Length: 264
Image 1: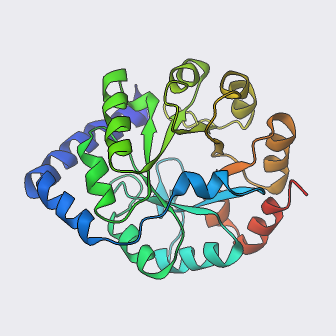
Image 2 (image 1 turned 120 degrees about the vertical axis):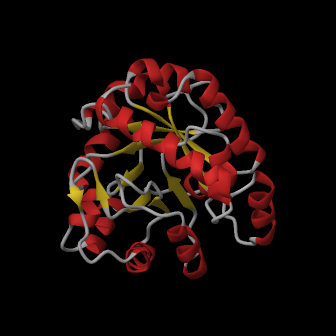
Image 3 (image 1 turned 90 degrees about the vertical axis):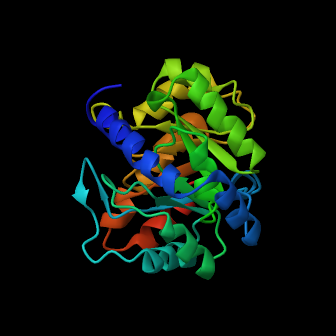
């Protein structure tokens, strides 16, 4: 780890320590018991014969700064829901992405779409923490973890009946991801250490993960239906996580509709 990713992880360790002191694991488990609406994120993708689009809700990012000046997570969720998004990805990391776990809770009250808690998971504690706000899926970024950490978070997520995205950035990580049989493998086209982006990363990594039984997902750098179709034509992958392109678009509904048609 280095550069941006290393800074994020260091700050996450500090912020998580404070949260753990304020919220016992028992209190989180009690909150989970009180919640009623949990949806199967992975099944929503697996059972979709067409393109699955995970549309992202985030205010900012380290690479782009503020993405949405008049940010309203409910309005974005409404736009995505009305446009045919399969699932939502909600940024919950507070310092670098200006996210909040409360956004998930708010959105769940209004929309019936499975939600990924998009954060930097470094501790199994975060699984219960995120589920206590209503998330349906968590993220394991292999570039941010050692093998023991990834295994523990994966096991904890399965114990809590959550879907899991294991995110990879290179071929070595892709090989490691194959052991997580129940996880969606997300191929990130953005290098988290340099923030460089290339959709060809999905193409090069696909040959390693193509026999994985759970869904494959291409993330980041997909700016148009042409990008999505390029990936689909080269790999057959038809599941995409798209954030900044939608957030910056003058007509996100139209962009979603165009991407959803690439297999037709």
